[in-house]
Image 1 (cartoon, rainbow, N blue to C red):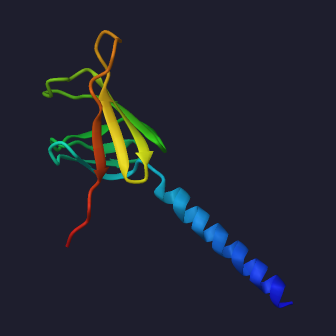
Image 2: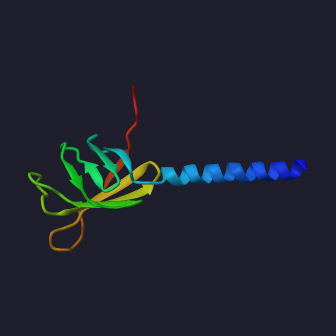
Image 3: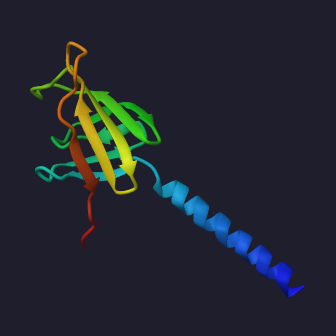
Length: 114
């Protein structure tokens, strides 16, 4: 009977680990630009941009996109963000004529300090 308890215990541990990993694998969170340390926070379809503006965008678990608001120099263009791993996100700005997007910008999850 001890083998049955071990098996059940291993299955419970596997389920807990897989659910916590799946939860962490999301674009939601606070991100810091690797280039200049600006911060952006994504919470579902809502985001707080580096300039302090709150916006609503097109959200999926691993992607987020939004139309850049005024008075930004790229206002009216679309910024696309994609989760590349648990700790890395990449953003590009779509070109206005539909050709090649901007150079990618890398974002990492901000470290929490107290």
